[in-house]
Amino acid sequence: MYRNFTNPSGKPKLGDKCYADAYTVICVLNIVCSLTASLGNFLVLGAVWKTRILHKPTNLLVSGLAVSDLGVGVLIQPLFTLFLILEMRSEGSIRDTWKIFRSIQAVFQSATVLILTSISVDRFLALQLHLKYVSMVTINKTATLLCFIWVTSAFCAMTVFIDNNLYRNFIITLILLYLVINSSMHFMIYRICHRHRVQIQVQIRAQNGLETLNIKRYRKSLITMIFLFILLMACYFPYICMRTAVNFIHWSSPFKRFVMRCTLFLVYLNSSLNPLVYCWRMREMRSAVKQFWKSLHP
Image (tube, rainbow, N blue to C red; front, top):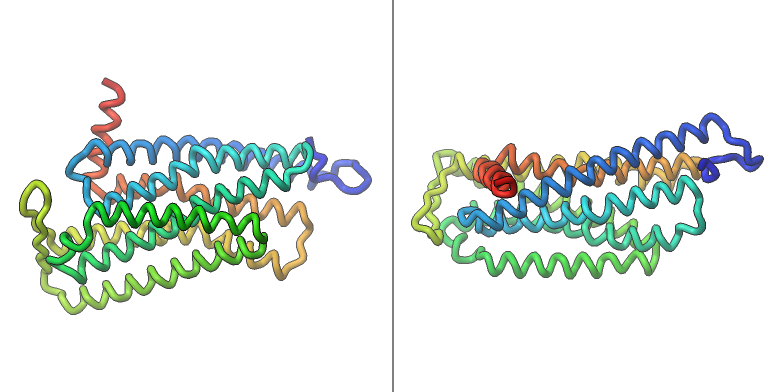
């Protein structure tokens, strides 16, 4: 069971068993988070699909993010757990298995970062374009953008099979670009809001009639976006730091693997937390999720 963590003499040390026990804990937590991510994001997708009032460009982007998080819960986390078990038992070569796993992981990681960036840009456009927003940002255009994001993410995943360093540098660069773009969006939104401190009234033509969006409602959606931004950075930041650190600090291989597995678990945890933010911050989404849940248990 502990062959992967033993010393050259083949006799297990206390530290070896500690690594194995820690891996077991990660596996258990990962299974729990896999279930919560799968259920939470399934409910969000079902709620948006069933509720006509939620059929808006912004909510379509949220649905795209939920699809990515659902993929993490249904595919990535179970595969990650399986990989950890194989690694603990050292059952044959896992290099090829790990490469395939990382390529699938890259698809969902890239999609998550790109969709969250799109949500930030969407909130900026809603404030900047005013009346033009509803005519320029449509459901069809948003759906096209999501298709482009998924195709781009699939191509990005191919870097795994080209070069490991290329893949790692690409993911880190993508996350750093996400940080820069979102920070820029927040700064520009702040400047616009600062110029219009008096209540901003935006009239948009919805499918079911004329709807008035005031600054209070916009700020609420903006704060939700900021929460998602902070949450992703909190979950991804340890991974970025450790991925950078292992290139400069000479740790033992077992400890290096263990640290990276822990930070990956935090990355996946983001997929379980996002649905909680939607239901906490978005009243319409919360009500729709409740109704969809009740419809599953007539």
